[in-house]
Length: 166
Image 1 (cartoon, rainbow, N blue to C red):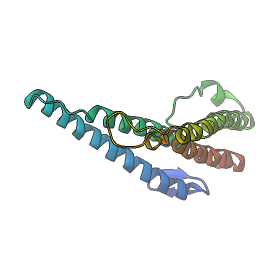
Image 2: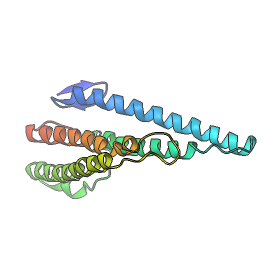
Image 3: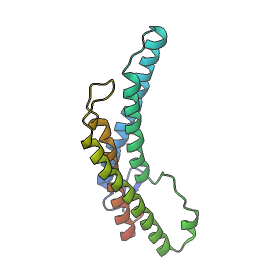
Image 4: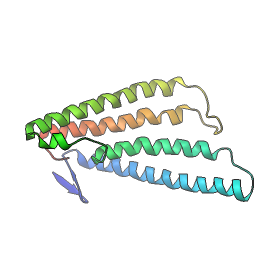
């Protein structure tokens, strides 16, 4: 097991740390962009008396991006919602089995996100309501984030089977 910064990683952790860092930086950039866009929208609406039509739609897409990819980061860091009180009282071998069953369940959900999200993104042939972008771009966030979570889940299952810490 290696330590990068103060995060413990398994044998495949260094690649995931790089991916995590990219996602965290992208989410931080998107949050900053949302803040700036919202401030501009408020300024235009209340100071200049002329509302901008594109600000709400763009901030909505950015918020969805941050939510979906932030979930992958939370899953990687084990900061997601979980019920661990019972699992922690189990013997080590049963804890391992419970964790793997949990990861498999999450993985099935992520696969559904990838499969149906890809169908949804490839099916839509429309453009956004206000922004001049095809809808497959914001819709593709669902399967891409599901794929990112699947990679994290595969890593977690691999580490669990090898007996490595998260």
